[in-house]
Length: 429
Ligand SMILES: [Zn+2]
Image 1 (tube, helix red, strand yellow):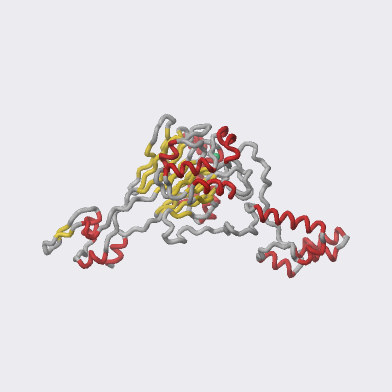
Image 2 (cartoon, rainbow, N blue to C red):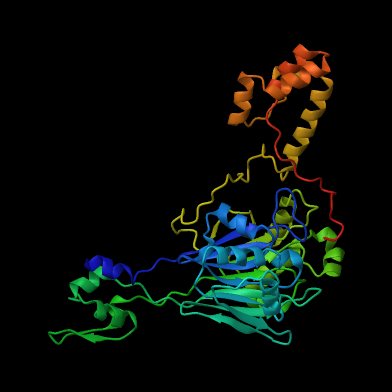
């Protein structure tokens, strides 16, 4: 009983960043539009809300009902188009709790117009924080345990960067020591935790600093996307645990980055260096990079540690903390899994091209099984055993070389989702 009382004063450091979409401008077969969730002590704070944000939250194992704040960086459609659908879902879920929406001026008009148009009478209250263009910085949310600061960035239109900052946490209570000193009451703990000295019944005085450690700095996180390099990015990211920064282009396309108001991976690393962040995570990859490791390699030459944002893969502000709080519901491809189907690994996509050519030209190799992928997942092995209806039908219709063909077809594993080609649809970004 006594211990459970204490445990509420020894809170864990739990802040988890979950990228929900890491594409830029247009989605690809493997990347969704920009959105990111911060999970903190059971609440969720969304940064941007591209299409698919709702579904990505479900897949990430994040409850939509837990959203407290939605921060929108700017009004490029890919950054906010998923918001209205999400808000409607909250309505259907009979949400009653208030929701805060923070973004550039005009966001209130946009949301209210949509609800009016759809004739929806909201059953929860939305509190808007609209940021005007002429600010230097603004504290847009000030909660008991954290605050969020916004600053304008340098994009082709008004765009906000955010810093999510936990307030300093009280020091840890040395429970054993406290018990030995005769502290038993809940109020006494509260007082000591708040920095007050207390006098026990026997007249002895217990100093707060005897059992409560130094206050611990809160964790922090900066969300900076759709901007060229700018000093405000550095200010927002100063000494953060995690800097989540866009790296739309590689340095070889620095001209294009400047023209479209975006950053290169080198720009992201520069902000990381100047702000002395602990971890740089790059995101917002142009669709031309089927292999975003090119961008990571560049960034890592200038700053380390740097990671690629991977959709649904949680990032912990304190890596030592317990894992498994946020558990995704879908299969996550391992970064070093070279047999993956998303084409992010150049070697594997080259391999598959070779295999494809072999299948077309050399029949013997096809049936020998050499051409099959190293990955042997269940659907593939089951189709090994019994020929599928589809293959036998098509064999009989074609009529030629059918025995050989059906053998080969049954060897073939189910077709994975193929990503778009690197040159498909990147005219804008
Ligand atoms: Zn964008």
